[in-house]
Image 1: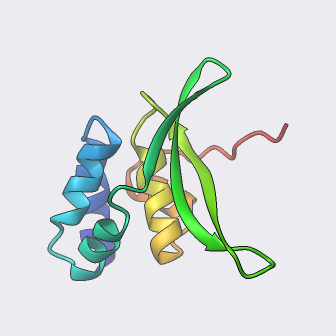
Image 2 (image 1 turned 30 degrees about the vertical axis):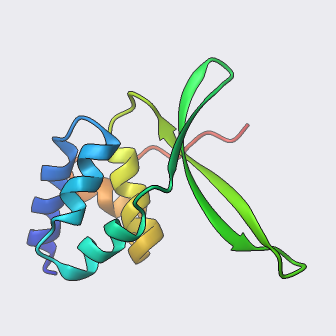
Length: 116
């Protein structure tokens, strides 16, 4: 995919209102690799209320140190956050594209999360 095509895709995704809408758009991408990566994530997101926030997690099964399957949850974003967070996570997790580069493609400034 050319940089110009990537920027167009990222900008179109950022116009969506929710994670399900973005995921659906990714599944129907003309780029087969992107569509397949998005399809592989179907059903792997959960909403949980923690500390008064509705958080969206990516839940997957991974092998632990003892070789047993274990559920792993990664906090992606809060419900209602700008979908750029999910778009950036998707391209980093699936294609190793830096989050900063995804934000740049969208014409946005990436802010490093503050450490607690």
